[in-house]
Amino acid sequence: MPDQKSLEPTNADAQSPASWSAPVFRDNVLGYVQDLMRNPENRVPPERVVLQLTQDPDFQTVLKSWESLNGADRVAAWKKVLALAEHHAREVLPACLMCGECCRMGSPTLHLEDLELLQKGAIPWEAVYTLRRGEPVHSPFKKDLFFLLDERIKVREKPGTTECLFLDGQTQRCRIYADRPLQCRAQACWDSAPAQDLSTQPYLTRRDIFKDVELVMDIMVEHDRRCRFDQLVAAFKEMEASKGATVDKVLHLLAYEEHFRTFMGEKLGIPDKELELVFGRSFAALLPLFGCAVKIEPDGTRVLVPDKGDTAGSSTS
Ligand code: SF4
Image 1 (tube, rainbow, N blue to C red):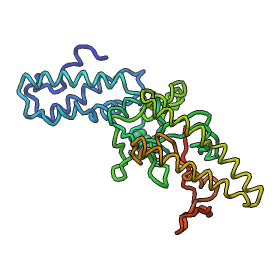
Image 2 (image 1 turned 90 degrees about the vertical axis):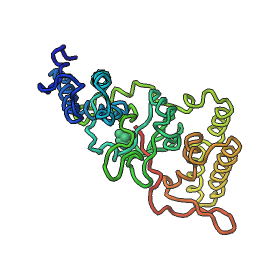
Image 3 (image 1 turned 180 degrees about the vertical axis):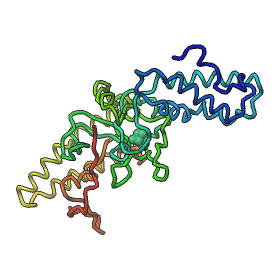
């Protein structure tokens, strides 16, 4: 933290915040943050703190209203901004400089600490989905398939890509930067240690989200029990060994799983877009991992057809 001298504004002609124009106010904020980060042991660039501060809604409110504030209110607002800058300087983890590279390689997996972001609406419920225990997923680095040992909740990716849903396609900036999840805050191009340290942080699960809604918990457990991924994998292996003769077993599992989620979703009043959070991805959505897709004929019967591309390629970390 800076000494008292560095609390003074950098503009020598205007020592009191009461007389600063908005551009002078901005310059003095930048100067203050530079002072805060002057410690040579600090590996975080001052720009990171500036970035985080300028995305803070409280800071933006002060900036927008600065010209209309009277002298006493400007002094009070300046003190508030100093406190905000110190907060962000303390709180900020080494993180990317918003080049968007990480955001294009995959969406974040959520930790327990991120639950608040969902509860306050910073991340909408329909923007996340569940990868259930035992679900086949791709490793983000090797792209090989493995089966999840524990449940994970992830932010969605844009359809057919590995790009995070919140990456703005035009600006290549995060649309929820001030409220981005823990994993994103820990990403550091220049140091992989903070992100690796996150493995000791508890991951968010559906149990954390729905623990107070007993009925949803019961239905989720029942869905997990009746619609397990190992059943689907076993049915595909059997179909392969029988050269397609047992395809009905696969189709039956698909139909049953879909019926379960649709029926229970309607009964519990769960919006369609949130079904993948409550029940995870459907069996049908995972078919591309087995090289096929399901097609519904005009008479309503289902047939398996070759998949045109891998569209189920969720990855996790
Ligand atoms: S939430 Fe924001 S920072 Fe995190 S991966 Fe998505 S776009 Fe990037």
